[in-house]
Length: 549
Image (cartoon, rainbow, N blue to C red; front, side, top):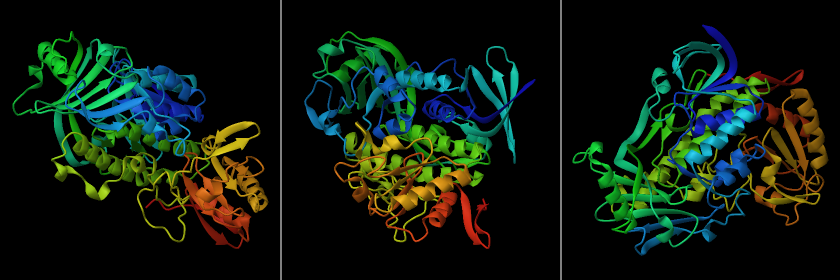
């Protein structure tokens, strides 16, 4: 049996696995991605990538444009309506293209491409950047020790087995994955909410829909409950209809019954419909009690199953992968302590929890307004706050002295507090207009005000050289200009202050004003945000590994 060595092994080529492979490879970390299936998804499944997902993916040159090119409709061109049928009068219009203008919040726009279009793009960029992606390859078994993971991979066609020795493994094998079971991970939460049937079909939708662009309808109909969504292929649509499994079986949904469901959903009794695919699925809400064990990290549906109402499940999967990618890259390259990886679960699990609660709220508000008891009120926040305003708290986030403890903040009114996402502000670099988010991605970035910036910049240069870790510097008024004067006020930092931003765009530390010893302050802070514990000694600042226990 042949033996291969790799820093990171990824199992599963869905949104989480492919995003992890693309982002790790782009960061120069060799990785192997294996997928039991023979190809990426041939079905639309999830639809759309929100702004935060586009932000974490756009750091890879060309990826954002490629995703928009894969979509049939333009950026933000979305309509979401509650109605009895597609052709019936709207009960409520939730989203229009104009309501999605959020240039104050993000430089990114919403991409409406379906999963069958997104996955091949992620695959292409993963391979172009050097990821080794193998389809028709299953994880047969694995074990792990203190130094890494030993995985036995099996080629599904030939049966040949290969041993892979990896420093770390990402389990992205989906809701039905088995890796979490091997680690004794339990799924907790409300469980199954509803049984549903997904029907992919072709029909003359151009004659039915009153508007171009991506359309999503939620049905409040006495005969059925569900949704209709347009696809990237012209005249192709998908309905998801709930059914009572105590009365109906999946086998009862033959082509004729599915054609009739499509006609009822669209409100066109005589519509010619071609059924392309029919498959049952279960809407559920579950969260892993742990998102890691040893050197194995759970991402995507393997770690959390989010009801698909509001599109938060796929987004949470992509953002899991992005969080793992930058942390693994720093640790693998020796730029951070291994304990940085302990923060993955600490930071990401609360995000999944509020995503589940928001999806539950969407489900009730859009489909079952008389079932308010289903809501998880204690974890429920607005859609924008859930999608873009979640906050991180961990040992590598250096909180301000007065931290209000909030789980989210309003992205329209950013606080600049450590643990929050960097505010998007349009800046000028020479003749170019850029976002503050265009200055982050590969390494840490120190933003310094114009008045005290010299001390901070000199300190950052010395700290970067000493640590060897990637640390960029940007001084307002020198490296970039802030024509509207919004950047420092939105971050609540004075012209003498500074702000340290992580590769994922989250603020790790800030000094609202000048420091009497910028070098010592920044050196201690930079060590801590990379998973080290800083302690004063007679020889000066010393970095030691944080006790993982």
